[in-house]
Image 1 (cartoon, helix red, strand yellow):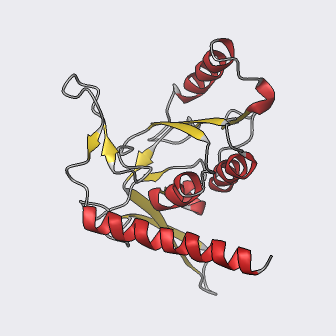
Image 2 (tube, rainbow, N blue to C red; image 1 turned 120 degrees about the vertical axis):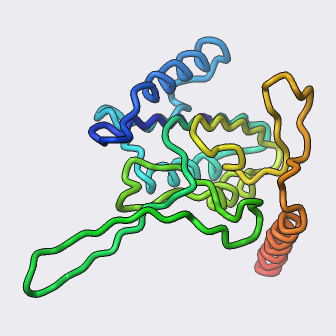
Length: 216
């Protein structure tokens, strides 16, 4: 089961990219030819007019769907190629009876609201409609893809975008520059905040399971 997202941001100036569609098409060919995945199990989102549009809603729904359908023993591969950021586009709409609708947009950093980021700001993916729908935050990706991954499912996620080092909010890092031979605990990780976050999510999970069993 695969979800491949490639966004070239066609027409955006500045910001248009040129290689994200190729990334997705090459990855699709590789994963089918070399690893035997069937096309029916591959979801492609690209802003090329021929595939599902990579809007915030569509990307999130694709991630949620692949998690909901995954079963013990399944392998999941996720590929995102596009912009990543630490800033969010916030739009303020001003309506006045004496003038036309005016849309004012400004960029603001996404303030980390749970204390798990060393620099105080969350990372985020930029969907095609980020101007109107906003960003997809790393906290949301953690909830959907990490916390939501069923037991016994092997997931690999490749995020080819800026500020993607902690986009999944995982505690380990690997730098492919020859300085490491194995993954290590991120030295910049706020471990206390991470443990608190995980503990809270674990408690939430246990309470959910208890409630489910009580309703049986």
